[in-house]
Structure formats: C-alpha cells, structure tokens
Amino acid sequence: MRRVKNLARNIKRLQAKLREGLERVDAAAMDVVAIDTRLREQEERDRKRGSRRAGRNPKKPGPTVQSYTVTRAPDGAVIATLDSMRVTLPPKLKALLDILAADLGESPDGLVAWKTVDQIGQLLAERFGRKFDRHTISQLMWRLRESFRVVKESTGDLIESDPVLGARLRRKRGPPAPVCAG
Image 1 (cartoon, helix red, strand yellow):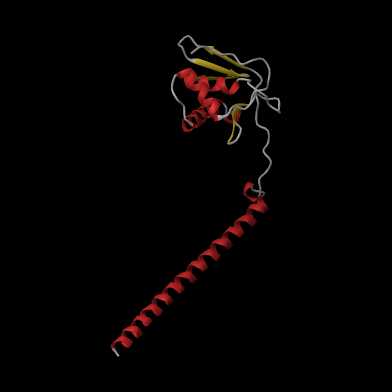
Image 2: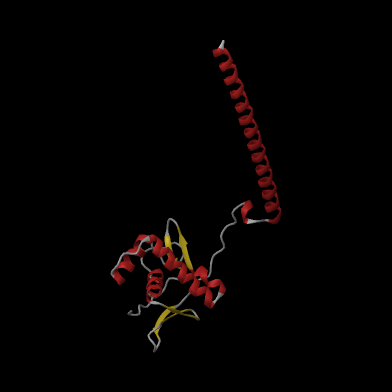
C-alpha cells in the first residue's frame, strides 16, 4: 500500500513538472512567433524603402587612382601621393601601400592584380624581418584606409579587399609603382 501511495505522489509530481514544461514550451513558441512577425514586418519595411537588407544591390565600382608616387619629406616622413591626394604614412603603412599598388600578375578589370593575404604577409615579412599574421595585416589595412579617410572621406574605398581574392589598391594598370627606400 505504501508503494502505491509513493507511486501516486511521484506521478502527481511528474504531472506538475510536465505541465510546467509544457507551459514553458508554449511561452517559447509564442516568443518565436512574435520574433518571426517582427522580422517579417521589418523585411516588408525594408523592401518598401529599398534597403540593402531586402536584397543585395550590385556593388558600384569604387574610386580608382591613376598615379601613385612616393616622396620623403625633409623630416624623414614618407608622403604618398595618389593622383592629387597627399598622405603622410608610417613605414609599415607605406610598405603595405607599395605592395597593394604593385602590378604583379594578371587582372581582368584593368586595375592592378589582387594579392592574397598570405602574399602580403610574406612581402611584409621580407621587408621587416618578422612574421605578419592575418590579423595584423587586417589591422594595417584598416589603418591605411583610415589614413585615406582623414584626407578625403570617400577614399577609404581605394583599398579593396575580398575574402577569397585578397586585397589591392584600386590603381589603374600602367607604369610600375615607385618604391621609396625605408
């Protein structure tokens, strides 16, 4: 008889836990429905506004440069001139810009060839005698873009990057880019 009472008590406890679990599942399902509704409403608003979230717009071609020269100021600073824009750069950013501007290899679009992140790291390592990992290269490219943006708002797009292709300066093919020692 005692066993039966214990079983009945256990069954009641399990039924209470089951009810509580079902209530939680129902509440979670209602939350999912609410989130789904909000997302659908947001998509509809984005579609009406023509937002990029509604569908990827084809990327417009970015700015390009025709000429790239490097000079050294009397105080030792390196000044890169891209068309008519002048930017003072520290040695690592100048080296990165030299690499990105170099016309090494083939390119289907009339701009200098892409360099993979591994190639960029190898070329930087040769210049500075230490290893450059992907994260460091990414940071250097960000700093270079920011250096351009300080001078002119839209010029950060001159440094083009792609997860598969690598990176390059959007420079039209032509005479080789100059290399300034240092």
